[in-house]
Length: 211
Image (cartoon, rainbow, N blue to C red):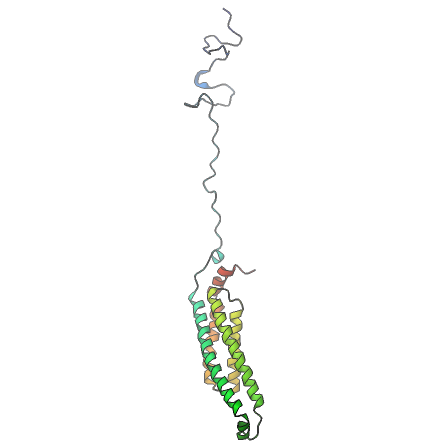
């Protein structure tokens, strides 16, 4: 009996499909796909590469600007020195103003006792200096607070510089020279601490790297 077209002898395909299943499920030239158990007769698709490992890990930022830095002890010490300097300056400025007010009340008698010398110019200068000192007190307190927060910028240096200038002024004037000599030490030390590398790293962690 003649076999259907293309059917090999001994083929057992129901329905007369005309194709004989090769042993092992391998078809020559088909790329070597094999029927897998439980796959329903279809060749298994190749697996996609696994990109999970190593994905999502970003390179770490430099340590200096990688995140918030704990406030260093030098920064805290500089702020405390600013507060102490501000308190002493406030007390001395108050005493100076009280003395100037007392002299103003008896100005005529004071000029007479001084041999007719006009002390008005000296009083005006002293009043100006006392007002500048009060401004310096405000800068010291505000600059110290901002320094501890890491956002002082040049404000703290201005406050310390003003205190150094005032101390030099009083030393030149010769009025109670021991007091300005003692007071000039604290702003110098505070200024050095604020310019240290530890404080710069702390400021950079709060405001970002310098541009």
